[in-house]
Amino acid sequence: MSPSSTPSSVHDFEAVSITGQPVRLADYRGKVLLIVNTASQCGFTPQFDGLEKLWKAHADQGLVVLGFPCNQFGGQDPGSADEIASFCSLNYGVSFPMMSKIEVNGGGAHPLYKWLTAEAPGILGTKAVKWNFTKFLVGKDGQVIKRYAPTDKPADLQRDIAAALA
Image (cartoon, rainbow, N blue to C red):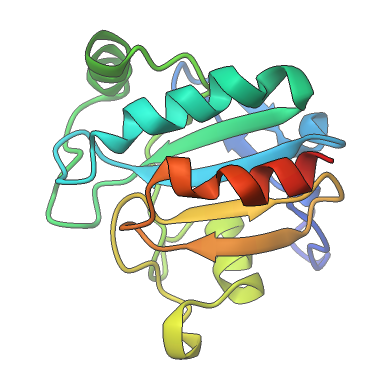
């Protein structure tokens, strides 16, 4: 995305995979995305299991779960990309795409998260991500459908995901 253009969908963004490869979100056009800021040492970390179950159950229908490690909340993901990838794979069998560590709030926030939080503000209109495992459901058209709190368990998103995939 050029700095002067205004993003109109999630497809206008790029990220970097946890292995350092560029990822164009436009490559996911026509897919439903569940974008989650993750952490390896958080009380919500067991949600990796539920996210993996969603991914396995719905990948064939077009769901892609994208994990974005973030160390902004209580320093709960301090590891390197290799350490994070190993942790997710060994402890939770994570096979969905994981991206490189980013910031989701403040001046250093990844442009994708600046856009997501503007498109789907939180409670009382707050734009900031409150904690790890905040989730954004994005439709096939690249538009945000809904934002979920860290306390919303992945299994509780089933109905919304099924509707977005239909």
